[in-house]
Image 1 (cartoon, rainbow, N blue to C red):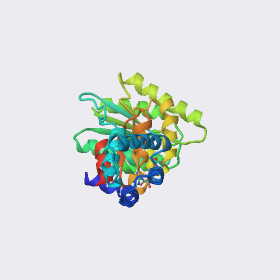
Image 2 (image 1 turned 30 degrees about the vertical axis):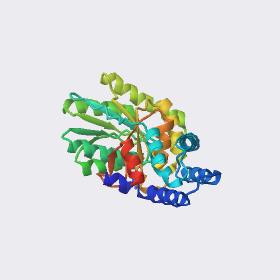
Image 3 (image 1 turned 45 degrees about the vertical axis):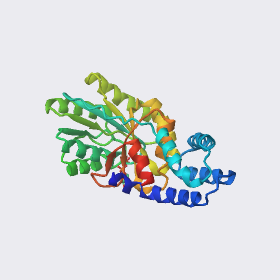
Image 4 (image 1 turned 45 degrees about the horizontal axis):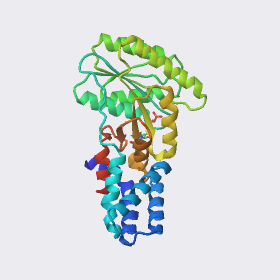
Length: 299
Ligand code: GDP
């Protein structure tokens, strides 16, 4: 809990400070609602979600006949809790045999770092992990993945830069089978220009995995950069349609005061957030717990 609390500190300070100041004025009038709306928008909670939240708050105030704004703080927390959905969505990791996870996302969002962190996490849980260097396009991507592989103490299957990513992943699957690997994490390219090509490339990788291992890929994780706010939301929509995404990883939560984006994503997309990144180090990846998130925001 402390880790997520720390990771959220920029958001919490910006958000709670303003909320505290607002409720200390005590009076709930039109101006109060407008300011609260503004605070939520500034935290990147997203227009649609904010509108929904404001409607619900107004209803609650009427229903409970709340007059003192101080009393609104717990109501706000309760409403956020409801928006965040109660469930956690655990990773689909097979008890036996090989689990294959594809990791997708735009360059710079923290994809390679996240793969390194995941490798470290699952290795520590006693799994045999292998990485596939499927971003053969971006200069330095293969080397960067190797650095993370070394740090986490796991091997990397790679080809030359510019080669066919589907062929790399195919080789990695054969190596995983031969070496009794439990978990194969596949990196992929994230160039944004020439989108059609990228989506075709991702689909080809997807099909190779599906053909080689029944039931795979077990997860397709889309990595999003929380500091890009509403952009993250549109990337989720773009990739969600094309690449068979099953879950989200939101990185750099520690670097933004706009952590409200997590609330917008939970509320507006049907994709679950599975992990959040709260720093650059190997153990700075947290399993996402929606209720804990709200708790940390108000802590
Ligand atoms: P990729 O292009 O998507 O593979 O992105 P990288 O993994 O290379 O990450 C881009 C930058 O974001 C690097 O400087 C990482 O250290 C940084 N980064 C990744 N995840 C996090 C995070 O959760 N918090 C912070 N503060 N930085 C992160």
